[in-house]
Length: 269
Length: 356
Image 1 (cartoon, rainbow over the protein chains, first blue to last red):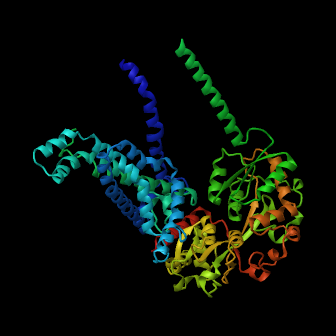
Image 2 (image 1 turned 60 degrees about the horizontal axis):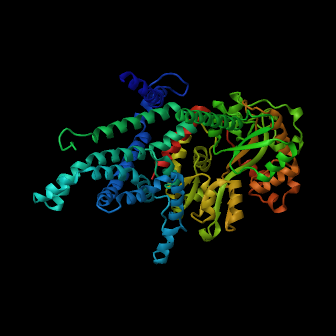
Image 3 (image 1 turned 180 degrees about the vertical axis):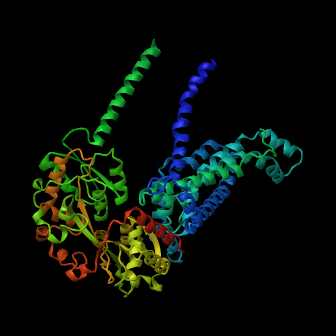
């Protein structure tokens, strides 16, 4: 039995080896290579001494942070009320539905909505406010990025809240706690695991949304993704591109660490 | 027993799928036979009727794949694994591909009709004697603007783009050499400068341009200009020709300080599987009538002198698309700067993009 189980796990180990460990090692290896192919620390040195790269990293971080905060502010109440409606699975499906559509299509749809002659501006015009430049602004970038990331936050938060045993909520009320007290001391702590996975699922991809920065923000918002794309496709400086990839991985670990499960608090379900 | 039958059926099904998939890959890779011709070209850079005509005349089946930058094209050809029979890169990339032996030397005895090409476009620095490449199109980088949206003001130079009243109204092509080139040429330096202080100065100079830039995009510029999302765009001549076709208020000009002149030539990559077809295609495209039809459709300028006879007079007399000798003297061709300086240009370009 044990032997069989071991045998069955071989494909998974192989998968992890081939598609997780090996690529990361390759990335690490590349990041130590200079333009001429020799081994060097010059990429890391360039990265940490370049004002441009450091500001870019900071900017990526700030935008990812804003996108995460926005998605969380929208998704948490949505998920909470969703668990309290009839046919909640159906409503959830409706909210998740946009993920079935290709991200590029959604982005192009937004170009149509936000452009000078688009729907929003037609409405503004109709209300007598006149057309505003919406496309190629930071605000539009944040709106579109938030829209795209919402399902990835909503789903884990919904599941976490949905998993809370109703008897806990009843018990809290029976003991005289107000609605708010019940929420803040019972539901919120118990749903934090969902928030945690949601934050991880949204923050990390948001660090390098290079397609959105180009199509929606017209390259007026620059994140690390833009620089990585440039180094791999234009300058052929794979070493520098890989170094930035490694920086992203390090930031990712930092986020995982900051959002890790703390020892204290109610973690048992 | 039933399980066994099901399993067998599954295996047969999977094998059939694998076989079909293999065939598909084989076709895509061009190992499928000698009647397939793989053309690797820029998007929307040939009249598709001409592909049909070529297929009809020669019996080859054309597989058309596109790229959106010289660098992306280079990476794919260099990595191998692709069996493109003919590619159409720009001059500085051809220079680099010749240096790195990524293109095949042409056998001129198999080429027919090179005499139609204007001698100005032959024997250029990037490929002396045209040993590796045959001219396809050429064009310029310039300023396209919408007369109606600018209300009386007509930009004539790069310098004009810095005007404060143009705040947030320019769509800029997303390319390091193009954008830095504007800074360099405004200051009177060469587009191919590798002098660090000149490049720094150009970047500083561009700081003043940054507030006027609405977005740095690529192929979308055409659509946005037609829809009047912005009043001005820095773009290529052929793109501008398409815009003017769709929106009559748009004008294209070459800036006073000079600009970039570029050539896209046909080359045979070292991985070509079907050289026979590649030569057939080169000869087909050299035919004056074909070249004229293609130029009419694509909007870029043809190097084919004989083809000019087949083009409408207003096209060939248009100084913005077929500039006079004196204007041509102001134009400069990109040279291959090598990896090190390409890196510097792109780092400065990133710095420029970060300016708010």
